[in-house]
Image 1: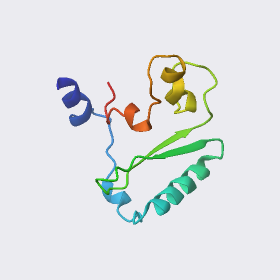
Image 2 (image 1 turned 90 degrees about the horizontal axis):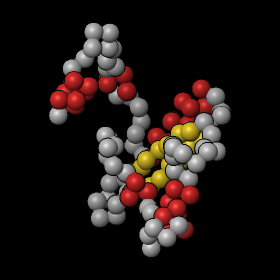
Image 3 (image 1 turned 135 degrees about the horizontal axis):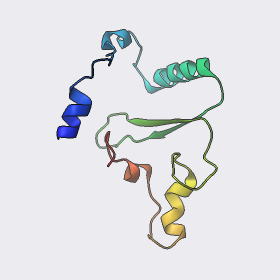
Length: 114
């Protein structure tokens, strides 16, 4: 808990805080608008990236949820894994560690991965 307080609650002397009002006027009425807006902002930075998104919506909750991953390139070396490639999901089954292929939800550990 001390780490959380020191890192996320207390601010260092030179730290700047972005006012959330800056983002109030963004149209987030549907996911397509959000994707288009995000893609346009990324294209302003260049076109050397891959945009991967996964629908994490749980049908019983009826809340649209999406995980977006942006990478400059797909990873060409085996470790450490920084991209959600097909190999990441099928590795355990292909190598006999599990009987099931992983789903993306199985990999998500929350905002603070431990």
